[in-house]
Picture: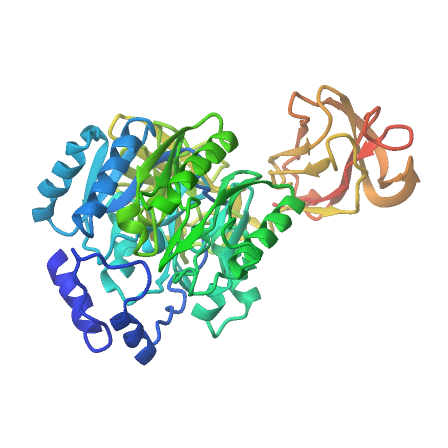
Length: 602
């Protein structure tokens, strides 16, 4: 079946693409034959075949905890020796697995033997049979996100005419149980770096690869799929770096730490000015910038930022070119000083650097499962208090994850806010969708729940965030924020509610972002106000005051049950928290939230 799929992909591309020799040293940049093919038939991205992920999304930075490093067993003997040295360090010092991608079952023994010969812990090697064209996995492999805590893959159209590489993620996702989201960009993954705080960086090569899109449209796509804010910077001239990828001169190594190349042998050059400008800009934005040397010797761009981080391990290139020997030591000293808690191991990359890439270019990072050894479950659908019609068909989506494998997934329905559950389906895939026939019911407290099971007998469930309405249950209650608060030592305190104010149901007013272990007062009334007070504004014409105390996280809550009286439907109440004696608040020391309008529903 894999052979049939591969032949289909290749036959569809024969008219425009050069024949690729998989075991040759296919460079990271376009070969002359590929460049001619692209000139005849430019690469274009598909119109996004999947919508963006819904719910909370976190795009994973490379310095965050990693479960595995993925490699593709392609190229010359020298290249494969580099892969094997890396695998040895990753499975021992790095404390991670290696996902070893091979073209076919006949290649498994050779690939595993190569890794074993360099001391790799083979119990930590997961071999995946997926045919690829090249070793440059960074550029076409999976970009991981957490969606509601569940690992998922964001894919793009590879900016090389290499059809097997471009198809990798569509095969990898189902094989490892991770949903794949396809975004509408032509791209090479090495032209991208990010921090765990959500800021990301790419060169303006991405604009040339997507001529039908504005820079704002490009960065908006990344934001929609990966929840990042991207800065686009000038690329190096192709005479200096033929890939124009940012990973050849920059590497984000911490929340506010970055390595950027320096060009002591080429001061004032275009590439030196680009690096100096990026260093100045990132310093101004709060980054600690470490500069490490780079050189262009003959046709080769020698870089040290193209390193691999894996938990407590850093794999740093070194080179045997005589002009680089001193720089090897300079780079090692700089990286060790920047990352004192890491073990830095240098690997000879002379054999591969002449092909426009080094170690970062030939790996992809696989983050740890977010719930450790326990499964993770996330209900993607029906998290906004929707109203459904009995008998209608509703598409339900879910995602799950596990450190080994999810063995079973079940969906359940509750009409009474979770007091009782009935089965919707079981034996489902780790991720997917189901056409659900909405049951005959009339309720304002409906919930759906997804449960993931693993082979060790563990299970984890996630239900819809808020109850939804089925049938003639009426209009669900609403929580609407209004007005502006007054900040304190922890910033602006926030009032919110994760529960809908429906008759017969519990309702909670939550206070967050306040000082810890302090008294707070919740005021309540049936009308808004705008009364100046201590430099802030009282937003409620209040008639009742409730007392609470914040916990060690600066949070507090006050709960009540709304009577099951239909006459209350449509009633509006207004709420606001005030925190006295806040050391960071101006005036007499009162910090205040904004207001919360609660409209009772059923």
